[in-house]
Length: 160
Image (cartoon, rainbow, N blue to C red; front, side, top):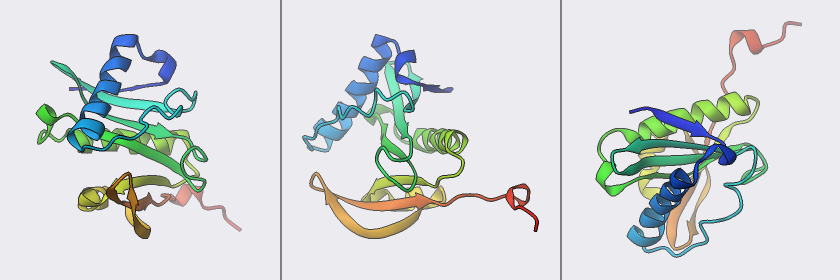
């Protein structure tokens, strides 16, 4: 399976419908969490939609947001979701690796941030994210702020 990466205007209506349906199926229905999923961040020209198409629609999804949209100090990866029938195939890691690469490419001078559901802390830590701040409740679900620090190479350090 390949990972696809598009801006909002590049999504056809069928793909957009499937992306939104997956988010509602998992975040609203499965997790019993009514919240305003359509937050106007999807349509921003800087937003990137990362997804994997399966046989029956979108198998996994994440979105990348520019610095200042959700977090002032860095870019954000959010709405990370894998459909019930697509779990245990490594799609979450694949989606996150592409999302991290996208954030690093689009906004190389900013750390990558996530608002992680508490039960997924080990998963995000395995990708290099570090906990920041205190745990908090978001829409009745325990969350933790996490940050993937900047990576500096020898070439990026200026010589005196």
